[in-house]
Length: 70
Image 1 (cartoon, rainbow, N blue to C red):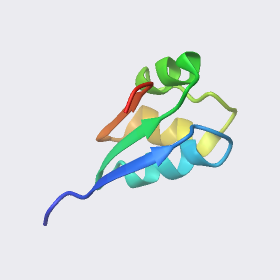
Image 2: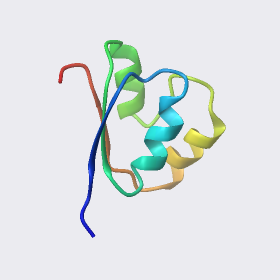
Image 3: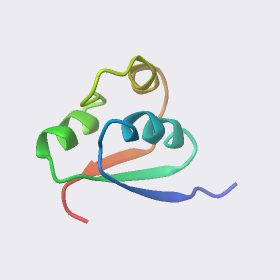
Image 4: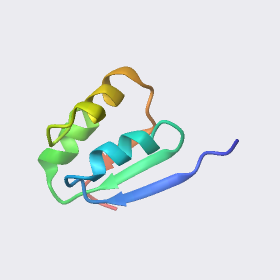
């Protein structure tokens, strides 16, 4: 099985949960202009309150990276 690379623009309200779900099986990159959000995501923390995403980040192996610059 090959790994798909997925790019997501913005770490807004909907994207953190979807991003973590996708990052279980594929390589996911999130591009955002907010350095605080990027830092939180790269430290496996959510910029919003989301119990589902928190569980994914804490308990699953994820192939994920957030960045400021494409």
